[in-house]
Image: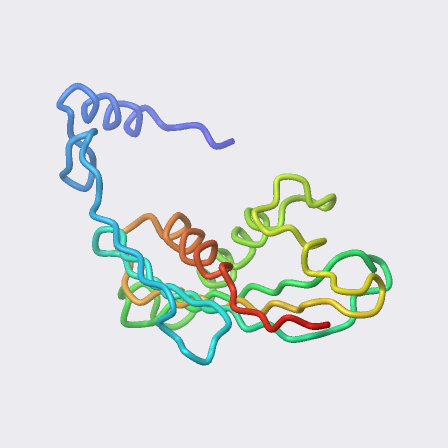
Length: 171
């Protein structure tokens, strides 16, 4: 955990005393939130989340695959986040690529849990149709359309809402 400098501590204390956050809102004000689902017809699940001035889109494509030899009782999920260069000036060039990778890794940890899968928002064992033979492979793509903070929260919400999938029943 990173410690705060004296200047950062004073800034935080001042905001608390004045009931003012760095974004100009009071401590109890919330950003307006909107969620739309099914926005990408070709995807098995998709959502757009707007949290204040931040807007993200997530989509999930599901394909039948074969479980890995190491985890025959689990399906597979891959997560990719792209930060549009128009979302914020810092996303132009390498800045967007680095943040995209950082967000992808953070969301994998959050949504897929640790090595044991404990605490996962997506239960990989629920993606297995026939143990060791057939599973669902989920490809999660997310796009940061505009950024004004709360990116991880917005992306996690969009992905979670997108997991209410439309999968074909296999008999």
